[in-house]
Image 1: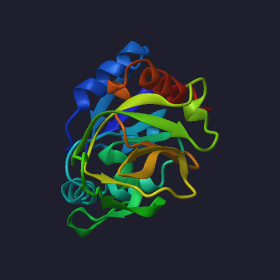
Image 2: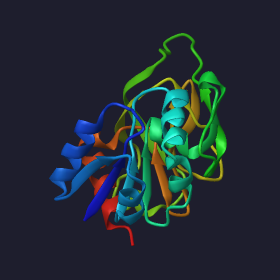
Image 3: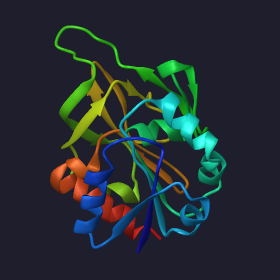
Length: 197
């Protein structure tokens, strides 16, 4: 299966590729519009800043390409935030595919930002992305901004407050955590993504 990893300038590409190889797929890091349009699956990965990622996507015309995709698309971490309308980080306008704005996580007693490490993920709606994954599993997070719970949210986690851990809107799916670093549950989620029809 042909998987395009959209090059938005973010880090963490190697671990996503390795996770795909374990599923028998090769991920091609690309900024080529035709390669992305023709891929069976598209992943928008990323560790970085929303403003710089969006600048790169707009500069290469990939913002419009991503908006027009019909195949399954998965945004991971920063990639999730880019699929939404915007981010409080730098006041960035994002792709606007899913309604909502990423907000900076609050600090408080026992709360560190960035939110880094393993945290529980709790389903709140049915999604093919979560098929066969037990409730209350743990996944690996590294982020300072998060999406509020909304109609697109299919799983939540808590770090001071509840926020979207997994979202879905049509053929667009997103995880705030890193499935490629989340052991068995992350492997299953990526496998489910690859099996989407």
